[in-house]
Amino acid sequence: NAVVTRFPDSIWASRAHFLIGTQLVDHGDSSGRASLEHLSDKLPIVADYVQWAVAKSFFIEDDFKQAALAYQSIAQYFPDSLLAHRARYFEGLSWYRYGDCESAEKLLTEIFDGLHDHTNVDPGFRPASGVHLADCYLKRGNKTDAVNVLWRVWTEMPHLLREEDRQAARTAFEQLG
Image (cartoon, rainbow, N blue to C red):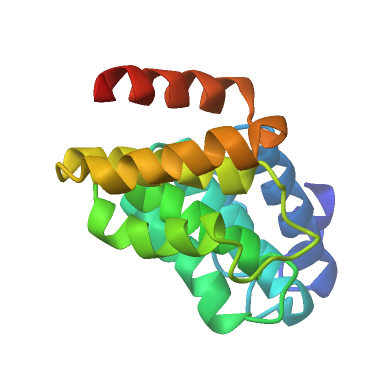
Protein backbone atom coordinates (compact mmCIF):
# COMPACT_ATOMS: atom_id res chain seq x y z
CA ASN A 1 0.00 0.00 0.00
CA ALA A 2 2.92 2.35 0.60
CA VAL A 3 3.92 2.14 -3.08
CA VAL A 4 0.37 2.89 -4.18
CA THR A 5 0.17 5.88 -1.85
CA ARG A 6 3.57 7.37 -2.74
CA PHE A 7 3.54 6.66 -6.49
CA PRO A 8 -0.13 6.29 -7.48
CA ASP A 9 0.40 6.63 -11.26
CA SER A 10 3.49 4.43 -11.53
CA ILE A 11 3.83 0.96 -13.02
CA TRP A 12 4.79 -0.14 -9.52
CA ALA A 13 1.44 1.02 -8.17
CA SER A 14 -0.31 -0.93 -10.92
CA ARG A 15 1.69 -4.02 -10.03
CA ALA A 16 0.89 -3.54 -6.36
CA HIS A 17 -2.83 -3.22 -7.19
CA PHE A 18 -2.56 -6.44 -9.20
CA LEU A 19 -0.92 -8.33 -6.33
CA ILE A 20 -3.28 -6.97 -3.69
CA GLY A 21 -6.37 -7.57 -5.81
CA THR A 22 -5.50 -11.10 -6.89
CA GLN A 23 -4.47 -12.12 -3.37
CA LEU A 24 -7.73 -10.84 -1.90
CA VAL A 25 -9.81 -12.61 -4.56
CA ASP A 26 -7.80 -15.84 -4.26
CA HIS A 27 -8.53 -15.81 -0.53
CA GLY A 28 -12.27 -15.41 -1.08
CA ASP A 29 -12.51 -11.63 -0.64
CA SER A 30 -14.28 -10.10 -3.63
CA SER A 31 -13.26 -6.59 -2.53
CA GLY A 32 -10.03 -7.23 -4.42
CA ARG A 33 -11.95 -6.46 -7.61
CA ALA A 34 -11.69 -2.74 -6.84
CA SER A 35 -7.90 -3.00 -7.13
CA LEU A 36 -8.14 -4.79 -10.47
CA GLU A 37 -10.89 -3.19 -12.51
CA HIS A 38 -8.80 -0.72 -14.49
CA LEU A 39 -5.54 -2.64 -14.76
CA SER A 40 -6.04 -4.41 -18.10
CA ASP A 41 -4.79 -1.37 -20.02
CA LYS A 42 -1.91 -0.70 -17.62
CA LEU A 43 -0.73 -4.32 -17.44
CA PRO A 44 -1.59 -5.83 -20.84
CA ILE A 45 0.79 -8.76 -20.39
CA VAL A 46 -1.38 -10.09 -17.54
CA ALA A 47 -4.73 -8.71 -18.69
CA ASP A 48 -6.19 -12.24 -18.93
CA TYR A 49 -5.24 -12.87 -15.29
CA VAL A 50 -6.74 -9.53 -14.28
CA GLN A 51 -9.98 -10.50 -16.00
CA TRP A 52 -9.86 -13.96 -14.40
CA ALA A 53 -9.65 -12.42 -10.93
CA VAL A 54 -12.49 -10.00 -11.74
CA ALA A 55 -14.66 -12.90 -12.94
CA LYS A 56 -13.77 -14.96 -9.88
CA SER A 57 -14.74 -12.06 -7.60
CA PHE A 58 -18.23 -11.98 -9.15
CA PHE A 59 -18.46 -15.77 -8.72
CA ILE A 60 -17.48 -15.44 -5.04
CA GLU A 61 -20.31 -12.92 -4.58
CA ASP A 62 -22.79 -15.34 -6.23
CA ASP A 63 -23.31 -12.76 -8.99
CA PHE A 64 -23.31 -15.54 -11.55
CA LYS A 65 -24.56 -13.52 -14.51
CA GLN A 66 -21.70 -11.03 -14.18
CA ALA A 67 -19.28 -13.89 -13.55
CA ALA A 68 -20.42 -15.64 -16.74
CA LEU A 69 -19.98 -12.47 -18.78
CA ALA A 70 -16.56 -11.83 -17.28
CA TYR A 71 -15.39 -15.41 -17.90
CA GLN A 72 -16.77 -15.18 -21.44
CA SER A 73 -14.57 -12.16 -22.15
CA ILE A 74 -11.44 -14.19 -21.34
CA ALA A 75 -12.16 -16.75 -24.06
CA GLN A 76 -13.27 -13.97 -26.40
CA TYR A 77 -10.38 -11.52 -25.97
CA PHE A 78 -7.62 -13.92 -24.93
CA PRO A 79 -8.27 -17.15 -26.89
CA ASP A 80 -4.61 -18.24 -26.66
CA SER A 81 -4.43 -17.71 -22.91
CA LEU A 82 -3.79 -20.67 -20.64
CA LEU A 83 -6.97 -19.55 -18.86
CA ALA A 84 -9.27 -19.58 -21.93
CA HIS A 85 -10.43 -23.20 -21.70
CA ARG A 86 -10.79 -23.06 -17.92
CA ALA A 87 -12.81 -19.86 -18.36
CA ARG A 88 -15.20 -21.70 -20.73
CA TYR A 89 -15.95 -24.19 -17.95
CA PHE A 90 -16.53 -21.47 -15.37
CA GLU A 91 -18.65 -19.49 -17.83
CA GLY A 92 -20.87 -22.57 -18.26
CA LEU A 93 -20.93 -23.22 -14.51
CA SER A 94 -21.83 -19.57 -13.88
CA TRP A 95 -24.74 -19.71 -16.36
CA TYR A 96 -25.85 -22.97 -14.72
CA ARG A 97 -25.76 -21.45 -11.24
CA TYR A 98 -27.55 -18.36 -12.55
CA GLY A 99 -30.31 -20.70 -13.71
CA ASP A 100 -29.80 -20.22 -17.45
CA CYS A 101 -29.43 -23.80 -18.65
CA GLU A 102 -29.90 -22.74 -22.26
CA SER A 103 -26.69 -20.68 -22.12
CA ALA A 104 -24.89 -23.26 -19.98
CA GLU A 105 -25.61 -26.33 -22.10
CA LYS A 106 -23.38 -25.50 -25.06
CA LEU A 107 -20.41 -24.72 -22.85
CA LEU A 108 -20.93 -27.68 -20.52
CA THR A 109 -21.31 -30.01 -23.51
CA GLU A 110 -18.09 -28.67 -25.00
CA ILE A 111 -16.19 -29.38 -21.79
CA PHE A 112 -17.92 -32.71 -21.13
CA ASP A 113 -17.20 -34.03 -24.62
CA GLY A 114 -13.61 -32.82 -24.38
CA LEU A 115 -13.89 -30.94 -27.67
CA HIS A 116 -11.02 -28.67 -26.75
CA ASP A 117 -9.09 -30.87 -24.36
CA HIS A 118 -6.17 -29.07 -22.78
CA THR A 119 -3.58 -30.35 -20.36
CA ASN A 120 -3.80 -27.20 -18.23
CA VAL A 121 -7.42 -27.86 -17.26
CA ASP A 122 -8.53 -29.73 -14.17
CA PRO A 123 -9.70 -33.16 -15.42
CA GLY A 124 -12.49 -33.01 -12.83
CA PHE A 125 -14.20 -30.38 -14.97
CA ARG A 126 -15.38 -33.03 -17.45
CA PRO A 127 -17.48 -35.12 -15.06
CA ALA A 128 -18.62 -32.02 -13.16
CA SER A 129 -19.83 -30.45 -16.39
CA GLY A 130 -21.63 -33.72 -17.19
CA VAL A 131 -23.46 -33.69 -13.86
CA HIS A 132 -24.60 -30.09 -14.41
CA LEU A 133 -25.51 -30.83 -18.01
CA ALA A 134 -27.64 -33.80 -16.91
CA ASP A 135 -29.38 -31.58 -14.37
CA CYS A 136 -30.21 -29.08 -17.13
CA TYR A 137 -31.63 -31.91 -19.23
CA LEU A 138 -33.76 -33.06 -16.29
CA LYS A 139 -35.07 -29.54 -15.75
CA ARG A 140 -36.27 -29.57 -19.37
CA GLY A 141 -37.79 -33.02 -18.95
CA ASN A 142 -35.22 -34.68 -21.22
CA LYS A 143 -34.62 -37.85 -19.21
CA THR A 144 -33.03 -39.79 -22.06
CA ASP A 145 -30.13 -37.37 -22.56
CA ALA A 146 -29.76 -36.97 -18.79
CA VAL A 147 -29.43 -40.73 -18.35
CA ASN A 148 -26.93 -40.97 -21.21
CA VAL A 149 -24.74 -38.21 -19.77
CA LEU A 150 -24.88 -39.59 -16.23
CA TRP A 151 -24.09 -43.08 -17.49
CA ARG A 152 -21.01 -41.74 -19.30
CA VAL A 153 -19.90 -39.88 -16.18
CA TRP A 154 -20.38 -42.95 -14.00
CA THR A 155 -18.75 -45.47 -16.38
CA GLU A 156 -16.07 -43.45 -18.19
CA MET A 157 -14.91 -41.01 -15.53
CA PRO A 158 -15.58 -42.33 -12.02
CA HIS A 159 -11.93 -41.78 -11.07
CA LEU A 160 -12.26 -38.07 -11.92
CA LEU A 161 -15.39 -37.40 -9.85
CA ARG A 162 -15.00 -35.13 -6.87
CA GLU A 163 -17.05 -36.12 -3.85
CA GLU A 164 -19.65 -33.37 -4.35
CA ASP A 165 -20.07 -34.40 -8.00
CA ARG A 166 -20.38 -38.06 -7.00
CA GLN A 167 -23.18 -37.10 -4.59
CA ALA A 168 -24.91 -34.97 -7.25
CA ALA A 169 -24.73 -37.85 -9.75
CA ARG A 170 -26.21 -40.29 -7.21
CA THR A 171 -29.01 -37.84 -6.43
CA ALA A 172 -29.73 -37.38 -10.14
CA PHE A 173 -29.84 -41.16 -10.69
CA GLU A 174 -32.26 -41.51 -7.78
CA GLN A 175 -34.53 -38.84 -9.28
CA LEU A 176 -34.67 -40.81 -12.51
CA GLY A 177 -36.06 -43.79 -10.64
